[in-house]
Picture 1 (cartoon, rainbow, N blue to C red):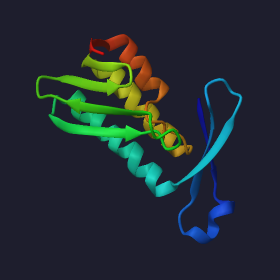
Picture 2: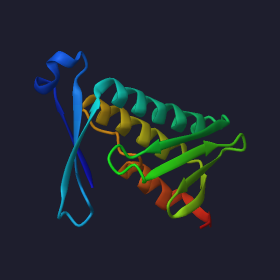
Picture 3: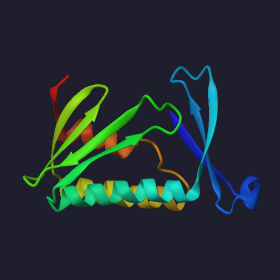
Amino acid sequence: MLLLSTNAALSKGLGDDSVFYRATDGREDNVYVVGISRSYLDKFVNEKVRMWGAFQKCEQQKPITFVDPLFTSESVTFSVTNTCKMMVKTVFGLQECQGNPMAILYIQDYLKEDLRHGYGAEYLTRYERDYLDQYCKVISK
């Protein structure tokens, strides 16, 4: 689980607010902290919003990979076809997703809202995981 908090006081001299992750190893035995810049967070989330927007409009999109900033072995790769399908590759395999405009708007709204509060840099947010569970099927492992 990844949690995020912003801390401008510790980064005043850096010229860019830092965003700090507090992450557990899944068993919650170990806690890790990693910092990223606010500009990186903005770019990361805006790329996700654009990718979901391309899916909603059925605009082909080259594969784009999002890597967890702490556990860099964890990542997700999204690509959008011009036939209005999204392919999602994770450690669990390749999934093919059908478009659902309302669910995509929901994801985009929450990504923007999370960004406003300093959240959203998970490589796969809970909103995106929900979408994969509901609208995608595994086509290869």
